[in-house]
Length: 89
Image: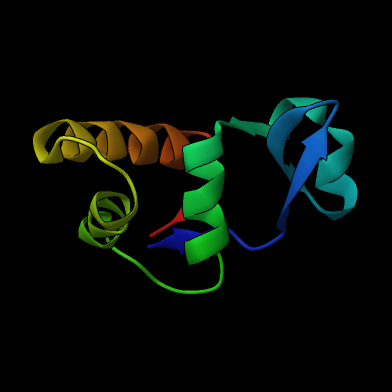
């Protein structure tokens, strides 16, 4: 999978969001709000293919987190991003 092309990570009034480029950017409901760790995932994987396991490994290498919880959280995150159009399979 990979992050959908045509999105740009921006800080909008202190909120990190993925904003679609072009005419899609006019629809503000298309913006995807991210927390800091999700933004870090985006920064590291935005230009390449990846798997859920790649993201889990990245988080385990960079944060002091529980492996089981991270797996659940990443699966949930990517389910939401797929549903909202931020991820391409």
